[in-house]
Image (cartoon, rainbow, N blue to C red):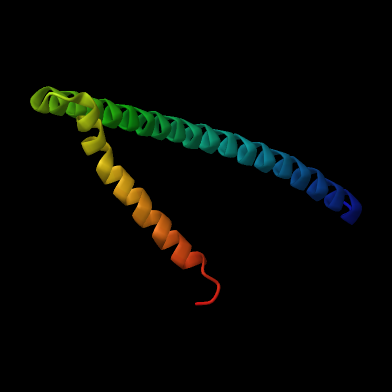
Length: 102
């Protein structure tokens, strides 16, 4: 075989190998994307269900406390107090962090 034929054959085989490698890479990326999106979907669903169940638990506690003390509005204020305090503390902390004079 001549050198030119060998070079042509090498280029043909290299291009065929490159096409196969690109196809394999594309398939792997698609598979990984499907797996990651599936896990993200499950994680989002779990997070949503956790938030909803926490809200329902809080509502049940407020209703129960309202039944015990005889006033549901007062029970709602008692139930919301920790969240109000946490929001005020976070706001104060955030304002301190944003102070440019420090």
